[in-house]
Amino acid sequence: MIKWKDEYLVGITEIDEQHKKIFEIGERAYELLKNEIYIDKYDRIIAVINELREYAAFHFKWEEGYMTKIGYKRFFSQKVEHDEFIKKINSVDLEKVDMNQDEYLLSIIEFIINWIGEHIIEKDKLIAESR
Image 1: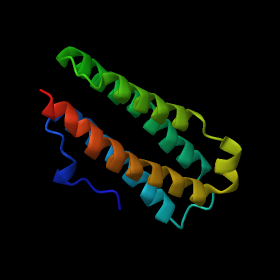
Image 2: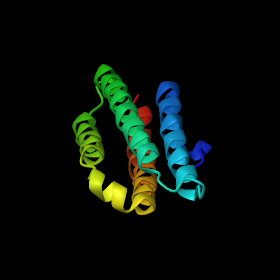
Image 3: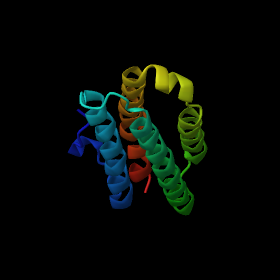
């Protein structure tokens, strides 16, 4: 469901590779959602959330460093969006995850898809255009 397409390329190799990793995490969430073998997915959901949190923090730090290096004029708005992403991931209610596992997985997938459309395609492409 969450597959990489060339239309997501921003034109900065390192950022594109890092974005692909975010897609991979989203795809794992989708595969877990579709999995009918696991009755209790809680530990696996938490693992996906933790991986997304850790990788997003790494990616945002790298991307923000790059933007600073090139003097990107929209740095602050990017930083605010990055911080909001991390805040959302950090605000996970573990009890809600446990009570409605598939529903929560779906919300993670929707969050990633929305991030791709609203941030990667609309905002991150501007970084490459400003070089």
